[in-house]
Length: 337
Image 1 (cartoon, rainbow, N blue to C red):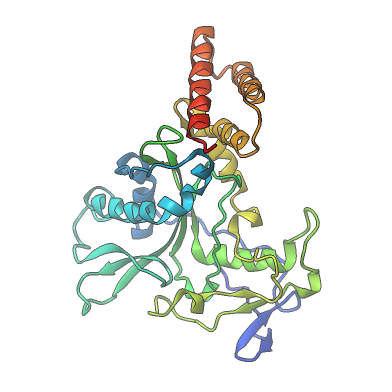
Image 2: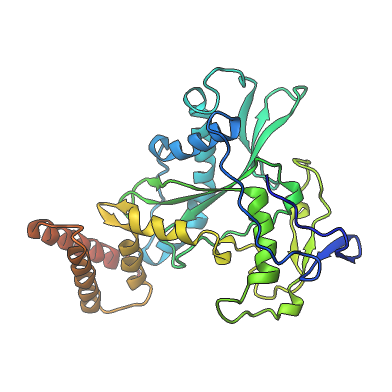
């Protein structure tokens, strides 16, 4: 369980409470342990980790090469909906193996927090909602090497076992094919909200320059104090007192996801190549490098793979180089003149 660090003597700003360095403990919030595997939240976590191998591919529309980085906006919502459908297909083998929750199913809600709930199909059933998931998709080969979603929900609007879940995804053939999702990042939503506020007030800028002076880093808390009310997402959101750069709520920038992001790029693969190399490869085309420079960059990446002994046989390395150069030429043909 996450302890609420909000001090009852926090400053008031009209009807909202202003959380500041004077009213919020400087002690970093502690992440709660994972739920027991045989509990409903534990079984839902297992279902979420089973999504990648049970995901039914979403086919990407035809895009020109410069538009590849915009796929997050094009397919993000469709992929999130397919994640919900996959969870429902996994009912009997993961989160409801004994059939005791037959009257419930996962539902995606528009403009309401959280955007996915395990909800009763009969409006007269109680409780109406058993669990909430704030679901985010992350196109892992986008130009920015981290998710850019914002999570602003106030801690008190998150039930104790609600989750913030991020699914990285890419296209199976890198620039075309079906959407392929990778193992998700899952964190307790109330903890993530508390950590975000703590980081904004006490930690932001400690690793470099901050655009917001420390004295102006207050957080205006949402007035929402209950879970799952049928009201717009904005009403559940905390807001920074001073956020001209629009960075408040950028979870990835708090450092909370840093170990996970590194693991995704180092361990997950497309076509037998680590995602970090594909990300660097696609980045070359956003900088309008000459073809010769692109080939040299590909050769350097191939050498890195060989040095790390990720690809041992010389013939396999040459084949890989050829495939990447073919892909580079395909992207060049797709690019508008």
